[in-house]
Image (cartoon, rainbow over all chains, first blue to last red; front, side):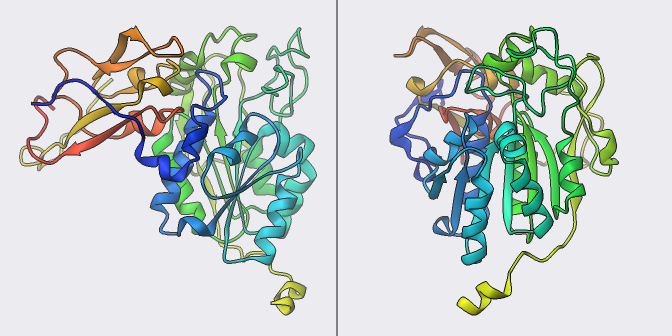
Length: 278
Length: 95
């Protein structure tokens, strides 16, 4: 009855994307496309109308996300995606603002904005696509590059201690903290739908393969090898103490902890001056 | 890959859905995610190449009836080049 694959011209999710821009610019084996795909799938399943979603992104490979989604979207200056999003979320509280950005953009260039938006509990959903390096500029070491990992600027191995992003987000007051990888698309989709319907500052770290910037200098080969790595090493532990969730790539068998770590209720930032203006 | 630790008590009466694979070959960049992580190992690389020069996924010979519409290939595809639709009628064989 059914034969092989049927060749078609469009995808069911194309209505949520600017399909005329596809295929996107990202490398083969990169996980950012999967995150964007899961995000638009979660938009469709969230129960929130498409025109109530806003996507803000910064600079870098993952900053391209805003250009591909068919919701109101802003591609902002480097590291300033959260300030732009803060303005939207504070003045138009009926909108659901999602920031999609990379580890360098969010936690190095925009690190200060990140911690203070979380401290104020601004109503933002922040997706940090962590590929362990600055991919777009050619693979330099960033704030999440693991100890001893090779990169363009650390030819003898990185000697700086990296950020543990879920621990950081919890410490500065996020109401929801999760970490998944591009391999865990189902769990990520569920986490996105749950987080879209929550108040406060919600943070999801998504570990993504970067075969060009991170895989090649570290002998990981291609994107699929990095995904196999996640399959082998990831341990789901929702209740783990976040001090233990550092990612150590020096030991081949040390676990990478993933899960929905923090889920608490905190009211969103709503300054009185804005309430008077409405 | 399929490690079953226990069998549901209503396993005999459950109908496993059947899916049909659809592809958009010219979007594919040959990352291999869908082929590698298909739980039923339904997919393989084509002999032919698309207009960017990549081999794209096709359904493996003899596996045409095996897709269970789990949507994993759909969600994990970074290029939105593959998806499945549920077939209403017959359940999957040998699932």
